[in-house]
Image (tube, rainbow, N blue to C red; front, side, top):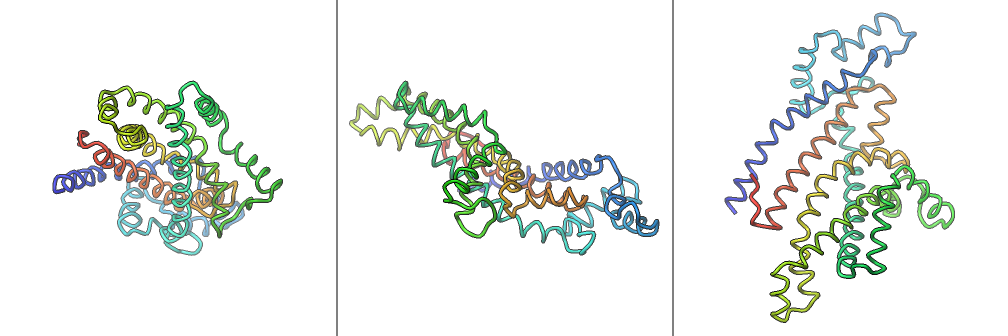
Length: 310
């Protein structure tokens, strides 16, 4: 346990330069966008005095280096992530009100992936060449070929319009979460199914499997206690790396299903030219992705103690 805590402390220290680079990239990304954000906010008909006041509030009247230092000192280190140009409300409060909804959607999509991919992948591996194996191949092809913005209208048309089983948009109940979670998790479920199948097929050919069978262990026990645990290592890798993709995909999914998460807030901030709030949304999504990847690295060690997380 002390060694695990040492590894955890080391990983957390490594997060410092990563977060520094993320913050710097987000700052530069917004400032590289063409156009005058102050003029876009106040409008073309605003007076020169109003325009200059907005430039001052947005710190655009300072040199770029001064803006960057102020961004760290006044926005990041205070924890406010800047303030709304109209209401003067800290951006962190607006983002955190939407953050749980996005995390709930992403986690629900992961649950869809796990519930579909692991059973289907294991069954396809143990029935190679059969109908279930063929079904998993079709699912993988559909997942690659059918993006979320195309799948979502089909699901809405079928389950909300024709069958009237589920709501088409909004939030407030678990039923509102089903269609967005399926839309977000479908493509990843298709990919993970094939990875689980390949990994299980490879593990079934290992010597320890033959030894376990020779000892008289049931096929179910061999498969789910020994083979599946070793097969999950590449799956965890994919899920950890793809969590950022889920967060990015949530932007489109939240817009289609009117899900009140960070993705929808990000689109609203872009439409309103609220660059400070845009920075905050991108920063929170990026930091979440970094933290999930760190957790994935630590999970490797639990799944296989032979792996050294350095």
